[in-house]
Length: 258
Ligand SMILES: Nc1nc2c(ncn2[C@@H]2O[C@H](COP(=O)(O)OP(=O)(O)OP(=O)(O)O)[C@@H](O)[C@H]2O)c(=O)[nH]1
Ligand SMILES: [Mg+2]
Image (cartoon, rainbow, N blue to C red):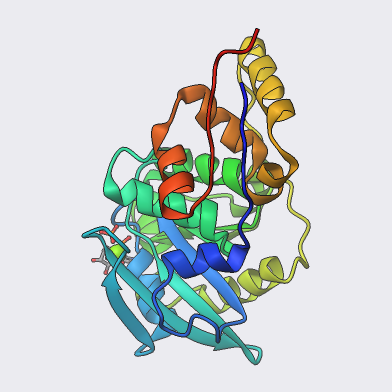
């Protein structure tokens, strides 16, 4: 399998996905991801207040909301992603979320999860962790979980996932200061993360290894190689479409290997 690849700087990626709003003004870009209805926009509104800007994602009818906040004299550009159950690019919403996390490479991705149905939400967390370890898990709706008698061991969850986990009740603005502090630490690489790795069956792991070995160094620098290998293994055409068409990469896959 041959893969030719032209690299493109991170800022170009960002500019393709971010609107003109404050594009070059921010210190850090933070993505807010999560299943539908977990409180992403509530967190977004609480952090950004009136400093917001909405539009559509380039080429999509999916709403894009960006906003800014300041913390410790630094400016954060927060991007409220559409709610998704997965990052498989099966819908415009999933593709927007996937492309932003993968290609715009935010400094931190905050995954907002619903404390009342944690297990289902963790599926998306694991998918995000396959792309990046610069993640904070925000366990929201803790007030609702408490009302239902559910207690969540946030420390244990953090140990299992290998990234910080913060509990919030965003509607009551509880936990948001702590969230901002941890986001800062991840953005500035002041916390060591050890993101959980999903291991697949040995034959799939072998194929992943072989595909990674065939990727160019530029490809490995620009995109998480393991994640890219998994998408290639799946035959995910959307990855090639994004790389080739939107961002002028030149990827050709040929399977004529002897
Ligand atoms: N009780 C409680 N309700 C909350 C909390 N956070 C958000 N909500 C409510 O949950 C509902 C969904 O919140 P949103 O912020 O719109 O959720 P979202 O994740 O942006 O939803 P989508 O954009 O549709 O995916 C709203 O009615 C919020 O008021 C919380 O911490 N506690
Ligand atoms: Mg929302």
